[in-house]
Image (cartoon, rainbow, N blue to C red; front, side, top):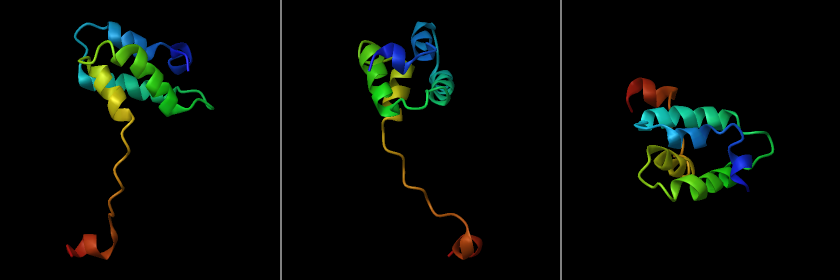
Length: 89
């Protein structure tokens, strides 16, 4: 996948150009990116393209950390509610 397909609005590209950008700011930009991924684009493939193009040359950038974290499997949901939650069992 081409980086232009993976980041059509240039959100990730611009995050790497902002001097002094923080990890929380990168997470916010990433959320905007994730919500704007076009239907039909394979998100893991897009992330791999972004990592290869941006994160590999700049591994210490906070967006690089965000991109790598996005490929990690999600934690299994924890059970909440029900009788055991109400009674502390």
